[in-house]
Image 1: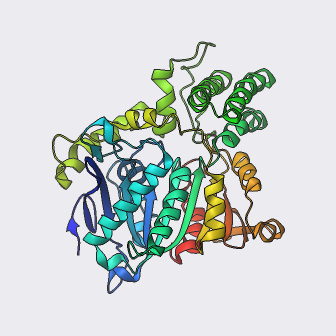
Image 2: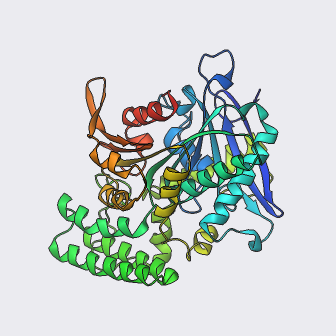
Length: 423
């Protein structure tokens, strides 16, 4: 069984060396459900976005772990129903670290292969989980990492490299096809009334240039132009929150047409989930203080200190789509594949997600397209919509932004039940 860590319930944590010089950190919460043995409940992996954001920090304390940022018990924590495994990935994120910069990953495939190596190490430490149903959940840039991870894990299992009861992968507000997300920003903001027609035009000029660079496969330039497009959004909207367009933001930051420097905002927009600097500082203080002390993290490992480096080294890969990977998952594996999207999210806006789903081309696509969209009702409240065909499902989550598990726990509970049977 586990150990007493930080917060309630039995836990385990530690490092798996995924390569020489590359050390991946995990934090496992055993379910607190009233069961005879925790292995009767599934194992859910949570992968954060970025790339470079910390699952053990953001996902855990801001979204679905047993405690919130202020140390209060979260009544919708996933841990009440299942075992939850937070992984700081890619190496260099959160408490994961590399011995020197040569050991960073630079591509999505390298990330996926590291995660497969992690699972081999994790199962060696916890063989009791080899037969437990495994479900991979993710958010944002995780929508690129998780599909390839799931595919490579399935293939590794087929080759006999490890035992794993992998069942499903669900992509939350995913950056699966980046350009489709970017092209959705202007129309969504215009329809919400958060920009005027002039602002919409300036956003679309920048977004269309990004699309041209993607089409030409000029990936570093496309990433830079993505950043420029975000600046146009911030100028035109005077500081809308990229993760929930209805969220309160500081109205004094964008009173002129002078945009803040990229160094000040762009990285924070993609990795840090709140424009509130105090909240971000609270999380850093928590992870570097009480959490690091409770978990016995070596003093030379600084939580989150390498995340901007992780982001920057993936600039060549950042704007590349992985639609073909999702196609391969759907056609070459028996896994259940899903997408859930909050309607108030801007960074990975739902219309862009629907757009790339239309581009999928797998054998059961017609079955999905012809399926009826049904409602998600929880306690007589309309929490969203669902469409399922073949082994693919799409979930529209009402009243939620980028962090759907925190914004609408009831709607997300439905998604959990659809995939894991619990929630």
